[in-house]
Amino acid sequence: MAKKLAGKMKLQIPAGAANPSPPVGPALGQRGINIMEFCKAFNAKTQDMEQGAPCPTEITYYQDKSFTMDIKTPPASYYLKKAAGLKNVGKRNRPRGAENPGRETVATVTVAQVREIAEAKMKDLSANDVEAAMQIILGSAKSMGIEVK
Image 1 (cartoon, rainbow, N blue to C red):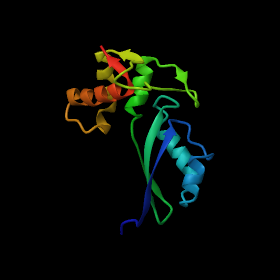
Image 2 (cartoon, rainbow, N blue to C red; image 1 turned 120 degrees about the horizontal axis):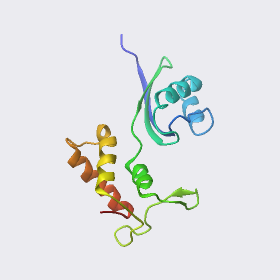
Image 3 (tube, helix red, strand yellow; image 1 turned 90 degrees about the vertical axis):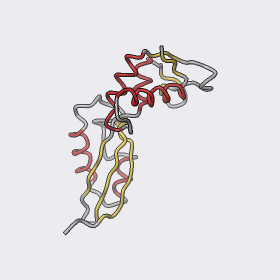
Image 4 (cartoon, rainbow, N blue to C red; image 1 turned 30 degrees about the horizontal axis):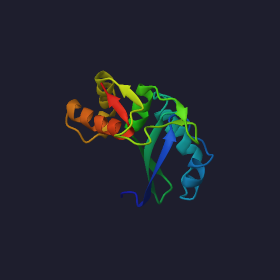
C-alpha cells in the first residue's frame, strides 16, 4: 500500500548547512518531520556542492512521519552574481543586481560564463538544449542589470 501524503513544502537552505535552528527547525517541527534526520540527509546529499550555495528544496512529507526531498540547483541569480564578481552590499550584506535594470548596468559576464551556468542549471530548466538554456540565463542577467559581452 502506498504512503498517505500529508503535504509538501519548499525551503531554500544553504548547501551543507542545514541545522535545527530557524528557519529549518520550526518549519519541519510543526509538520512532525524528524529535524535531525532531515538535516543529516540534506547535508549528506549536498556535501559535493559548493558550501553555502542556496539550494531550493521541495520536501514531501507523509502521515507516517517519513519524507522525501528534491534538491534543485542554486538559482541562476546566484551563479550570475558569482560570475560577475558582485560585492556584498545592502541591508543583509548580500550581492545585489541593479536598482533600475534596463537603465543601469552593474556588471558584465562573458558568453562562456553564461554557457557554463546554463550547463550547470540544465536539469532544472525547461529547455531542450544548451542554447535554449542560455537564452533563459540571458533573460535573468538582463533583469538583474548584468550585461553579457
